[in-house]
Every structure is written in C-alpha cells, then in structure tokens.
Figure 1 (cartoon, rainbow, N blue to C red):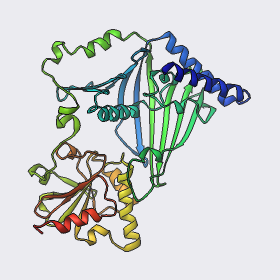
Figure 2 (figure 1 turned 120 degrees about the vertical axis):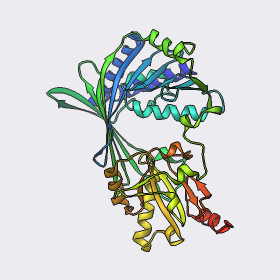
Figure 3 (figure 1 turned 60 degrees about the vertical axis):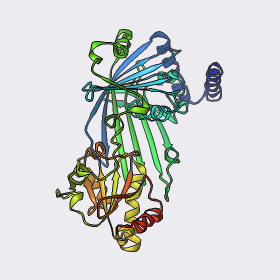
Figure 4 (figure 1 turned 180 degrees about the horizontal axis):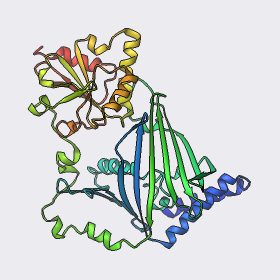
Length: 413
C-alpha cells in the first residue's frame, strides 16, 4: 500500500510536469522537490536550528529557539525537537511519542497504536508541526502522516533579492477555516493562511519562512522561522543516547503513559475553586489586581489564549452583543465575565485585543493559571456560583441556554 501511494504521488508529479512544461513556477518547484529527494538519498540525518519570531497585531511575542533533528530511516522515520534551554525534548516516530521534561524529571511515552494514547500522540505530533511549519520539502519522505502532501506544489514561485542575494520565494495561500470544523460555533471562523518560503537558489535549502494568518480581518499573526546551522552530520549516537532510558541520568525520572500522565505534563486536572484559584492574582489591562475570592456574584471564568480562534470568536460575540443590544447577554443575567488569558502577561497584547473586542472592562492576565485548574481545550468556561462552586463547565457556550439553565437549577442561590 505504501509503495502504491508513493507511485501514485510520483505519477502525479510527472503528470503535472508533462502538462506544465511551459509553466516556470511548476518547473522550478519540481526541481526543488527533486533536489530534496536527492538530499534524502545521500543523507540519513539532517539537523537545523529554528528561530521563531512572532508578531500578533504587530506586538512582539518572545523569541523561541528550537533544535530539530530529522532521521530519514525509511522503515521508521523520526524527528526530534529540543528547546533552546534543553529542558524539553520531543521525539516522534511512526508509532511513539516521547516527551522528556527535564524541569519536572518526567518522561511520557505514548504509543500511537494504543487506543488510549492515540489522541495524545496526534495532538502532540500536530503541535510539534507548528515548530516545523513549511520546512524543506525533503521532509515529505518522513511519511505522509508527518507532512501534508498537499503542500508539495506551491501556488507560485517568484524571484527576489534579500541582502543582495537572489532568492526564490515559494508562496502558498490557503483558507484555513476547515481546520476548526470540529468546533461547534454560531459563527464561521475564517482564517486566511499565507506562507512564503525563502529558498537559497544555490543549494535549495530554505533560509526562512514567513507565515501570516488573518482571522476575521481583525487579528493578524505574523510568524517568521529563521533556519540556520543546517548539518547532515551523522546523529546515530546522539539518538541512541537520548532514548537510552537505562542511563544513570534518568534514574530519578518518573515514566508515564497516557493513562497516568501527571498534571505537570497534561495541565492541571483540578476542577474545583480551591484556595489557590481563589487567591490567584488576576491582573487587568489597567494594572489593577483582583481575586476571585473577592467576588460575591455569579462569575463566568472565560479562560482563553490568542492561539484559539474560537476564543477570539467568543470575545467578538460579546462585542456584537454590545453593538446590537447595548449590553452583554450574560451580564444582563447577573453574571460577571472575567476574560482571563492564562498564557501571557503581555499587557500591550491584551490591550490590543481588548480594544478590538470592546473587552477592556473584562480583560485579565493570569499567566500559569492552567497549572492549577483544568483547561482541557485551548478555551474553556466555568460558571462559578457566589459560594464559589462550579455550576457549569464546557468548551463551548453555544447559545447560553445550558449555562443559564444550570444557574437556574442551582439550589443554593
């Protein structure tokens, strides 16, 4: 079946080549793919340094650096991602996902074929793809499961000059809303996804990648991946050293699978409003600090992050309610909304989002809160009673009917 799939892909490439011999964009792309295939045949390993710069609405996020190693083993291709301070190592192959966390002294081993581990393996693998977005095309041989074959042929190729050097730019424009079809929402989530791969014309390596996502024409995420330190040095001994869990360095590590992952590796499993949550500082965009313990009314904990399109959609929904009704629906039902970002303390970023969503009065930062309360999705909602009990929780508010019914049926108030 794998051979058939490979032959089909090859025939597709040849067919495109035959029907597009006069199209220089297609020709250049095919030359690039062929160069990539040659690189795989000649080398088993490739390692790179990946520097990630992000701007959200032109507000800078902290720079991230990763070291990535690819192993082109046809039977079991794999890749390794190591963050810059070497506190975390992620290893993927066709069957397993390993996370070695040097901060918490724990190792997670998840088997893809284990029914309980399938979801976790898939989630972690696809989150890692975020670090690897639009890497050189010879990664296609890391199996279709690792990389989308739809990105083998870009929409266009152009020439440009960067720092006086001629560079080819591979451009891909894709509507990304389909990625979130599993999220039930009253609104569509239109995302325009643009990728510009800057390719060195001398060796066909990608020097950098620029990715732009536009959501609802109001929010723009620009990410630049700088690729450097490309090496084809043999890394066999390095691989073996990482995966040798009998080494003395791992003696005091705890080993976990999907069934017994601790909260430090999956996020907190707590879903109660305990003293830690009551006393966790919530910082407004005005610099004021408040605490849940001081609230005497019904509260909606709207836990969100900017990486979550449906979360942004909820904030925009609040704005639509104000624009059309003059108030937020839940506040009119006696519920105070706390829109809490649990990932960042970048007040300038939150202020920018609050401005676009008319949320300045409800916007808070509580970086790290997810280590103390369960947030199983990127966005999550808790309805808290005045006596600090969780009355309702879900990842989707829908039309508020379930939440309001839970409030109505709560006997203590």
